[in-house]
Amino acid sequence: MPPDAVATVTGPVAPAALGRTLMHEHRARRVQMTAHWNPTHSSRRIVPRLLDAGVTEAAIERLLVDNPRRFFAGEPLPTRS
Image (cartoon, rainbow, N blue to C red; front, top):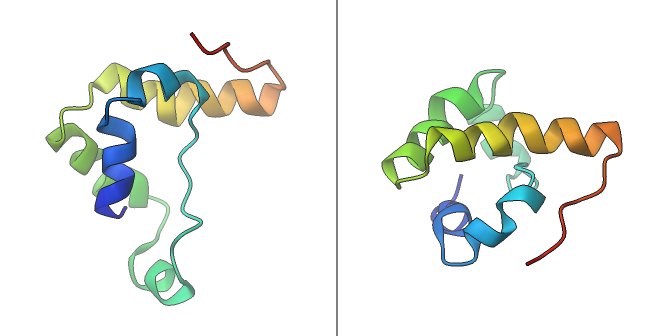
């Protein structure tokens, strides 16, 4: 996860966007993906960086569990406030 991606989750807009955010790795090049990605990539490399940056466990749960569940269930996105 590049530093700007951590900033996206921890920046000033993050609390308002948290319910509308899905994590993905579209920026990674094939070489990067091959070198670092495996099924535990998010839990071993990304989650610790988010925790170090001050993201709460509840927010990480929302990003990794709640938001994808809602997306794949076809539920509407939360409205922006």
